[in-house]
Length: 125
Image (cartoon, rainbow, N blue to C red; front, side):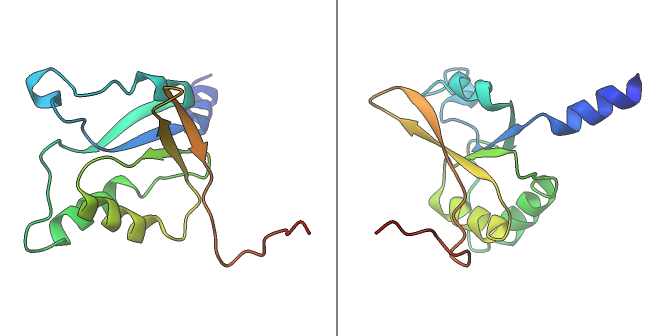
């Protein structure tokens, strides 16, 4: 029975939150991301105040370590420092992961599938 639970746990999608939401450290997050829970369990990768200063190395290594188990059925919410978002893109460039995009008007997350420029697209003429 334990094996089944472990297998099932591996198949549950994870929503990777790149950085904690601003205000989290003082107990008052700037916005609510609970709507993303419908896509899977949320895993925060970096603290709210993480930044790239002078060298991307330390942040890059930490992200590589935390993103090593990303699966094709997982999601990512890109929040925080644009330099960190860029580093994350470099790490995940060859993997399939779906981005969750917040729609301000509808107030819901929409999945944005990974685009691979090397795959041929169907064209409708």
